[in-house]
Length: 254
Length: 254
Image 1 (cartoon, rainbow over the protein chains, first blue to last red):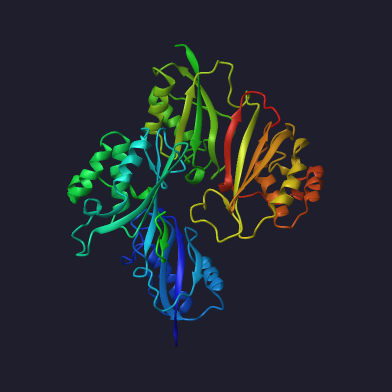
Image 2: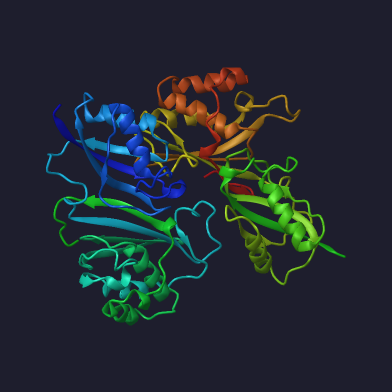
């Protein structure tokens, strides 16, 4: 039977999950999706995501695809069938049918991640799993100054948790790091050509050290140039991180 | 030893709790607070809240008080000590020392509750415990029209889940019901002289029936006039409800 390509736009609350990728029978997002699809197609379906997310990391716009015979009258019907079977912490936002050439990971031109921080206060009881909660007030001006050092095409080896994990290049381009503040909530949005393993959490960890005064903005440049992970501060926790969007068209510098 | 009055401003995520009020050893907000205070004072401390909240109901501004000898150098120190011992889903936002005449419940002049609804979509994986998630799009204009019938001083017996629970009057004054919409999120803020048991959830349940077309705005007036709980639709679920604020000064009509 002729196969067609199915693309899923997925949102999930990562709190109760062991990340995206299937690991035996551990509760992962990919396992839940594949279980539901295999039920619907009555045969094993394997999906391919745009990339992994770690335990506790959230997504508003993860993308995955799979090839399978057409089985539903419309993309909307498949979306409804999946949402009826999935746990409410995993939602299919959209289904469509790109060409057979489309691949969630290899076709991606870039990604947007968001990192949420609450600072300066006793913390919100509602944000425990959704933000990094810091008591001290951060100097966001110094953080923005430091962030400027990261914009552009650089070797981000110092901010990759597993530099030896792959032989691929550690050069990436960050187009933009957008800061927004509302009361005690600070949000950083990173747009780039791609991100190395734990890169956004490592960058945020370093920027927060600038914000609390333990590092100077100029230290970020030094750490970047060192290309050595041991020079950089520890990563920010998983709970504050969101995969907002995967871009499949060339991103213009915002 | 001379006792002074301690007032606590408390925020909590009600998700994991069996409501405010102590019920044996069940995990309630009051039990957690009393356990921590009894540890700090090395003697049994009993607190008095402005009112109960049900299982799963949240608070941004619950108020409670207790009498005890002065023990901390400043209200800030007590706040920090409590927050260090409490679970992160219960936070003390402020401590102060009102006069001995102050009573969290009897001194209250009014309250503000918030009810959050998501509508028109597949639901957000992040809102399961924090909003009532509805698939259909609500007609918020009709809901606002219906809400006008509720403003003012009325006998709200039709919207009290336990009208026989107390011999006190079921007359209350609603000063305002403020609607705000942002994308799929609809927020209703109820300000009133006081609210009967489950009144906000019962009012919201009825307003949503107007929003989805099963009731007309004029039906709300009829239900109110009936003063009979059996005439009114079932309550909205607990997860969408927040106690935002307790007023101790006379509220002006907003």
